[in-house]
Amino acid sequence: MANTSLPDGEPQWNSKPQLRLPGWAEPVMVASILFGSMVLTRRHGYKIFDRRRNTYGLLSEEPDSARSSDDLLARDYMIGSGRDSDVDSMSTSKYPPKKRRCCGTNLLTPNTSRFRDYYHSRILQKFPFLIEMFYWIVTYAFYRCTKILSQAMFSKMGIWDVAQDHGLAILEFEEFSWMSFLWPVREQDVQKWFLNGHGTLLTILNRSYALIHIPGTVGFIAFWYYVAPSHTTFATVRRTMTLTNLFAFCIFILYPCMPPRLLPPEYGFLDSVGRNNAQSVWMQGNYVNSLAAMPSMHFGYSFCIGVTLIYHSGLFRRNLETGEKRKNKFWTLFYVFLGVAYPLYILITIVATANHYYLDAFVAFFVAIAAYLCNRIFLILLPVEDLLFWCLRLEKPIPTTGDRFRRRTSRS
Image (tube, rainbow, N blue to C red):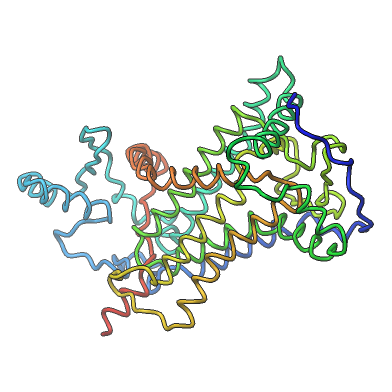
């Protein structure tokens, strides 16, 4: 066990448990955000039950045109590679195979455009945001597995004791290592400041910790899907956040870490979230990994969101994407302020509520940067996705991200 100095014991807080949200409140909140986003980002002018109209709104097909966005990408790739003969064969074939590049090898995968008139394909074409919902459900399922895998790995040593030792080792590192100058104020002192005379603020932070992470992140994904200037820009952020998740999940499994609030009372932390009845419904149940403090996904997400908002402001971009216009000074400063303030607010929240150590946020910062640099690794899964859509007899929908910019450009 780490030899870190002990504070005076568990701090006292006279706060009474607050009114607890009913178990259905958060799921209804998230479902409302998703449903609203699905409607907001729907494809205008496209009718699910009118199969006589073979148009996707953005793409009006000609007899020899590509039959999906993937076909268009394959054409561009072949032309850029000087493979005109392949382009000709694509034009003469009714359902030409998709060409994917994976690990330096060209792969041909089934063309699912033959399924475009199936009703479940048409529903996806009308509401393409459903695909994003599917991606995040898969990611959440992976998170649920981290507790099982971590327990299996440390079953002989006892995962609780291992996680506690890791948490104490982090406290010792923050206090005695050469990097201690980065954290001049201890986590215990931050929480005590809120406990002594600022309890109302701490109650607000407790609620924020519970409610912002899942509903807030889902809301941001919906917002960015709608306002991003192109799907390429949106997908970069989505892949970065997803890879941040997966990197963090690997650390959760290999390095279980007890959050400060679960340490023995003599280390000076109080479980204010539990005291306030502010636990999120998403953080309860047998598959929730309560020993996953390192790294902080709350901060990792907030950092990704903050950087995206600053990018969206356009302040530090010399050239804008097609259809974008410079925002006025108010909106530019608003997005910059929000992009800086949101990660700082989350950092204060996770420390004041004793859910994370400083080092958790520090590591999450680098995990997010690594995820951004490596985000295109997910493109190697495109052949698998093609096969999945083939098995489900679905055509992958054309995203509506950037539609409003294209409509603006066409009107000008």
